[in-house]
Image 1: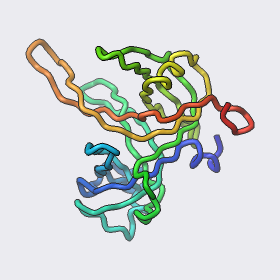
Image 2 (image 1 turned 90 degrees about the horizontal axis):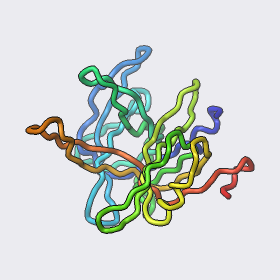
Image 3 (image 1 turned 60 degrees about the horizontal axis):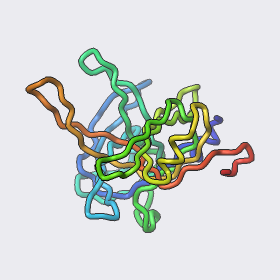
Image 4 (image 1 turned 120 degrees about the horizontal axis):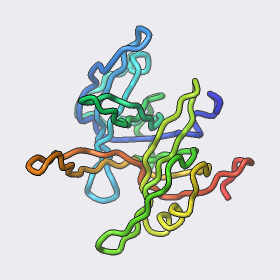
Length: 213
């Protein structure tokens, strides 16, 4: 993918309330990168708390405080972080620019990805017979890097997703969601963790004429 395609292969728009003010995460080539959390409403009364990363040059001139309502456009990115000698896939929204919150319209959480199935889909049903399919999608970006984005599909999207083979190029539209789960570390110890993924609203096979089939 070329640089010019990056917005269309991985585009996120979020509007929400800042939960934590930006704090310095790391520096790269002399530039600081800051992290904060954004609380984004769902159609229900629940909210998704989404990690956000912003470069110093993008943050310059913007004052972001806890409790502020902000809007942003960016990309959903992944990176590996070593935690206790184990590599863990981390996910964050990388800010391209800040927007006027009025530009979000009625949808405060939207994402569009164009990428490739890079792992066999995992299909299952819940005890209440709800169909679910987990997909891992690789999205190319500049400098020969890729983001590995977990996606979860439901119902007919799940039935469609389970038939996809590794290497299939897709267009996925949906929203970023956060959910908590309990990880059992030993017989006596459990830990509550947070997972981030794309909740799939629509999934299509991508054709070379840039139209979904």
